[in-house]
Length: 227
Image (cartoon, rainbow, N blue to C red; front, side, top):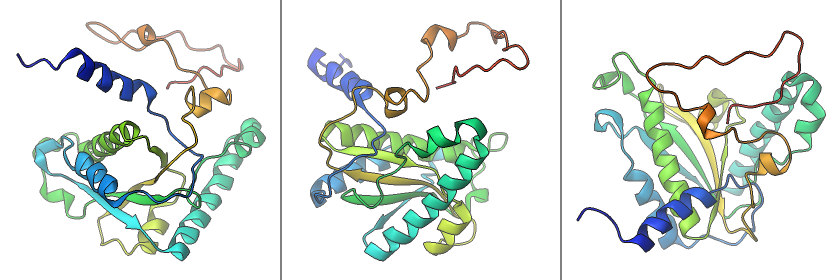
């Protein structure tokens, strides 16, 4: 009795399967009613202790977008330097669509989180996990609406927090590029660009304890990622 109909179930799994971290957008505006539905979907996410730690900031100013883009570009260069031999390969990747997409949102953690102990006494990072659930809700709803979303994490949280005048204790955790796209990637973009590949599920599901993997030999170059 609690089961959805077969077409409804198929639609849920389709959205999960076809969701993509998008980087290429058209500049067309997002319908305000659709944006409201997506934010409501995010707000329906589960949260530890029902603390609802997510805060979403809509970026409507063109100069603010440009300032955020500059922060991301600075971190992109620093990340490339940290990647060593993959630096040039990384710099060829498109990692954001801040100046291209119809909407930019910033997802942030609320201030005053130390007051919330329920479910966080030994795992304080569960507030971040809750925000991630809200972002995933928004992501899947956007895919169902035919909109692309890209999660950008290449920025200094302190610098972005200062730019957005976040209160003490609050923290920006994601820049979300949202908008219309010409097409969704057939595979995750980083897989299409041969940056990484998805590992087989059976390598990541254990039973009754941790299954230890054989580590690569010292000096051996192994590009197998944990996705």
